[in-house]
Figure 1 (cartoon, rainbow, N blue to C red):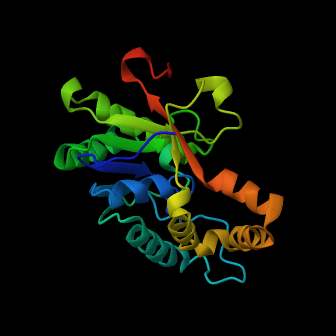
Figure 2 (spheres, rainbow, N blue to C red):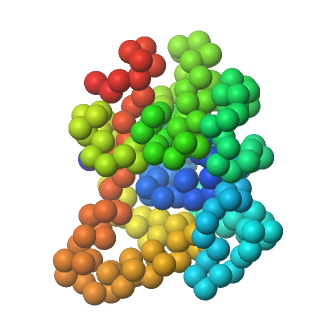
Length: 234
């Protein structure tokens, strides 16, 4: 298991509210608790998301405002004090000019000078918006002199990513902040209220059900995207 230590600055690059919390919240919390300042670039407000809460707490008109508030609440739990919203349209990021999105990401990189940039692993994010944002992040980083580039940590959504990328470069034990991780996830209740109920039932049940939840949520995995060899992980 890799240890999280204070670093110069952490930059998160994602297209939707909730991307920053599901599968990454524990890592982010460990970094910020260690004293690392963190910035989140969020491309859209997820205004075309299909979920409206269960029972519904939103409609198509109110969903963007609700999801922005959920994102702000999650950032508070994560320790992310710097939130940058790009105002792109949900589910259309893949049709944007990647160079123009990269312009905006590059400007933030040059401003905050992150040592680590966390995003989806390019091409393995499953959702087109995921891959479009991570691709733009790579373009932005490639523009920088090598000595100024942050290390890109990519999370993979595809099934069995090890078959494509090999073993992850970093496996982070986040069990010590699992309660806070779940709180960050729960902040996005319009999208995942049903999932939360099942997770809490499993944790309360104990035994194998609890152990499985802890196995799934207690570690987070990342692959370094290596710019000099086309992105293939060693």
